[in-house]
Length: 113
Image 1 (cartoon, rainbow, N blue to C red):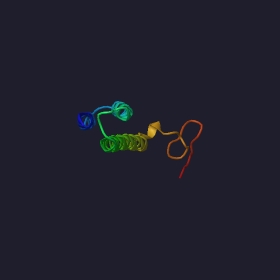
Image 2: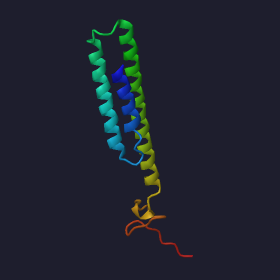
Image 3: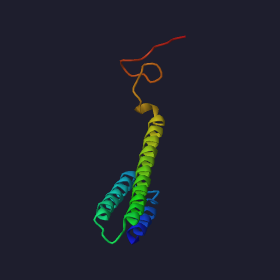
Image 4: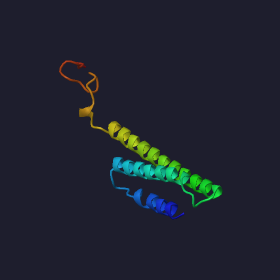
């Protein structure tokens, strides 16, 4: 049981870094998933626990993996939304010239009234 509590504390402590880089957070979460996966593998060879205890620990570990995967997905979604916002709010000079609202030398309209 001590392995589960240590993993739970890792989940709470490593993912609360709001200002850190998203990719480093995702890498941290992936490392936690790898640790839990290793714990799942080690659980099957543990002779100290009966079948019911193994099943309970397996369920807890699998739930933690699902939680971590959901956090990864949420971080990726937030990152995509930020990229979209940055693209939409980019200055007009960075957008390609279309000849009407953003003319260039070869693509422009001359209108005299």
